[in-house]
Image (cartoon, rainbow, N blue to C red):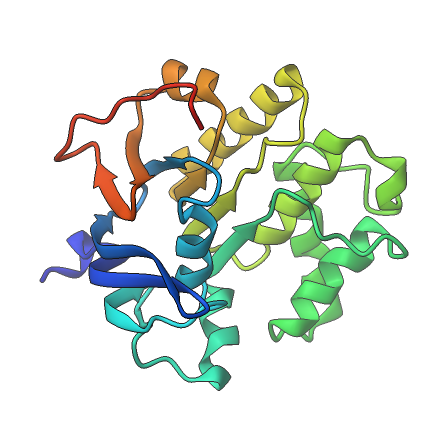
Length: 236
């Protein structure tokens, strides 16, 4: 397969498990470089479990899955940090250290992923904060920021290592509609700059407004709008 057209994620007949329970079976899909894809479904349908499997927080027990060049069926514990350096992960609940400044939160991730040159670290931190519209926030504590600003810090943290793809789990779920729209537009800008995005969401306004490809978790299966007629309703 030509490197330029190789999918950034390729999953084939995978089983997605939460403990001993299979939440999704026979999962098959691919995501291309620079693609933007929504992941939808009811609460408990398997969205978060799928994302956690992709970033190796849950083991792949059945089938095949490759993401950014890593085979999740064979990945070793010591390889997981290297996988996550090539991913950006955006959580709904921020997961910022409340007792550390924005800069310290970002530096923590950089040190954990192998950065050592302090000058380069400061420059990269300034770049990502400017990219997310928080150029003057480095010295602030998380509690001094609004919810939307905290989510932008989380996105900046996810961008630190210039990932090939962002995995976002309900990144606008706790935000007011206007703030959520601004954060979503930031994701669009990041995507336009070449980063693929897989975003789990319950935000029906986004789904109606932006006709991106949709993956839907439903009744233990993963449906793909490329091959299925997926209904987008308000029942989840």
